[in-house]
Length: 290
Figure 1 (spheres, rainbow, N blue to C red):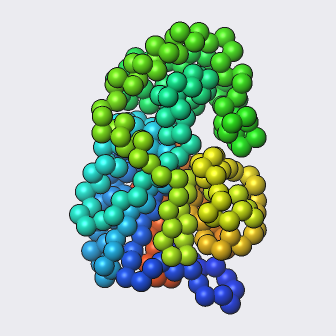
Figure 2 (spheres, rainbow, N blue to C red):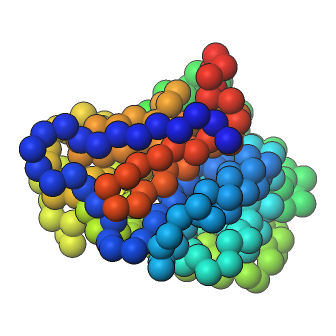
């Protein structure tokens, strides 16, 4: 278990808190990093034994699939994390959004997703597939950061140029057939937001200035710069992933815990109980790039 960190927003306001007698563990973007997820679930198991709490809640912030070594194993762990007595809340990330839209027949979404981690996901489910249209890695990274401004959140109209729709439909059908029924049900069951006391959990963030009850699913899964750059008081502290930072990013209005597990080798968990905050890390966050 890596070094622990505690922090609370500055100011005179009452510090954010979980509900009474509740401990919450939130895990950032996993992206197929099953070994790291298994390690951090073990760390949570140990940490929770030291806490007196009636309710124990595990919140997974989404992006279980795409990239990494084994998306299928990650879903298995999400379905059975080995934490008896825990409530498990699984949120939908933008990659699950793409996966589901492709399964539902949106082939243009599938063309984009295949370049964005979908090909690896299908390989994890036993299919032999490569992306139907190769892209330069720098272009893919730029696309990741431009996703908020693209049509329909993350789907470029250029994604299907030069791609045979018959090939895409064949891939869609083969991928649908490769998914175990309980994995398909898992993806369909994902919610976009969850609240515990003064903390609001989403994959990507929320639209500043919009009441929580009016937030769109698309913003919760896809938003980036307008949320990250906002200093607004959202009325809650938003706990999110989606935007990679080398270490957890703590602001007065949000806490980002996507430490880029699939490329840095570091998966982060935020533990919350009353006004206490504590970070757990699987992997070495002190090494360069981690």
